[in-house]
Length: 424
Ligand SMILES: Nc1ncnc2c1ncn2[C@@H]1O[C@H](COP(=O)(O)OP(=O)(O)OP(=O)(O)O)[C@@H](O)[C@H]1O
Ligand SMILES: [Mg+2]
Image 1: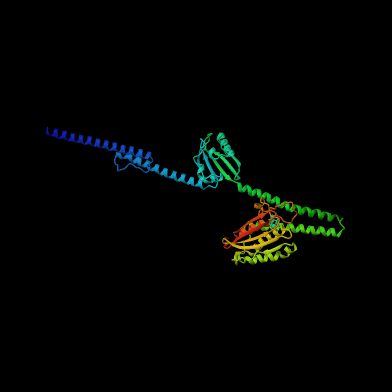
Image 2: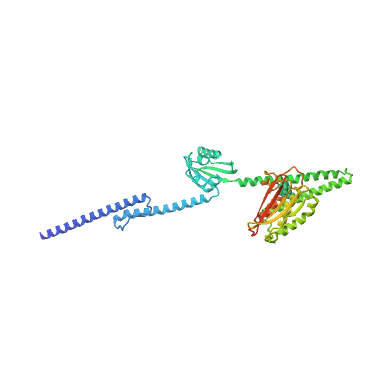
């Protein structure tokens, strides 16, 4: 009996222990599920770094362990996605080409500063706004609409007025579906088109300048070749004119070469100490005889307080003064006056050539420094319109600038600034 009682006691104890263990396991599993539930709530609220806290062992630890591992992988993926997205936005922001993405509702969801700049808008004026409101340019809207309705890429050249710009625009659907997101890229080609136009004009100007003297030479040579011209005086006159035309053409070619070297900075300046007063004296002395012959008074303005020396290329600066004086003499009638002067101005020396000549009408003033620009094209004078373009290049190579003021019928005043401390 005693043995039976002992066995029953042991079994009873074992049962109690089992029940206790089962209950404890159930309690631990319930606690772990509650912790995992809480952790998932916090994760879904955006607390991407949150993990199920505590140490879990045994079967109850499996769920928190698996959850924490999954949360870690999620955090890693999130971090790498954010890094990719940041890099992409930096790339889009840094692009020289304008980029705009428009969603199916016509709203701008991505834009970069280049897009705003090229459309003449401020940086914040695109993002989040309706495309048709933000960019009221009819042609651009048309391209986007065509792309949306056809789900096919569109490309076109668009010209904007005020300020004038030439844009190369492409609209590309970002999904196969019609009316999905649309990527609009905008490339500002204004300068390329301008360069192309100016190249074409340049070639046509050069051909024009060469064609006339060449045609004249050919006609005179042909006449001489027939042998019908007996008059020695006529022959001499023809030969003189041929020689003059040849000189004119070779001057033109020299000027063109000079200008092209200056523009491509292939003519390095020989910088030395230069006295502005001496430059004026030399230039004036050179033109004195011609001025007297044309009954024009050529003077150097009363010497200002001593001028500082310049660090400049004296031959090039003489060339500038010679070009300006040549023009002043050509466009000033007898009895007129030309004044040369130099003065110190804001860390520069300002040179000035003033004349009491025919002057230049206001509408021509902004163009006189352009290649081949001549106010009066019909006038049969020897100029080709390259002198002032060369002047500007030389002055700019010294880090300075040129300017002109003029009154038609009263006279003109050309000036240029050479900085005391050269920037090159
Ligand atoms: N002092 C001036 N007075 C009036 N018009 C001027 C004067 N200087 C220049 N111009 C005008 O500007 C134009 C351009 O001058 P620029 O010196 O470039 O050419 P150009 O004198 O005609 O030819 P080039 O100098 O090549 O022999 C001239 O044709 C002339 O119409
Ligand atoms: Mg000239």
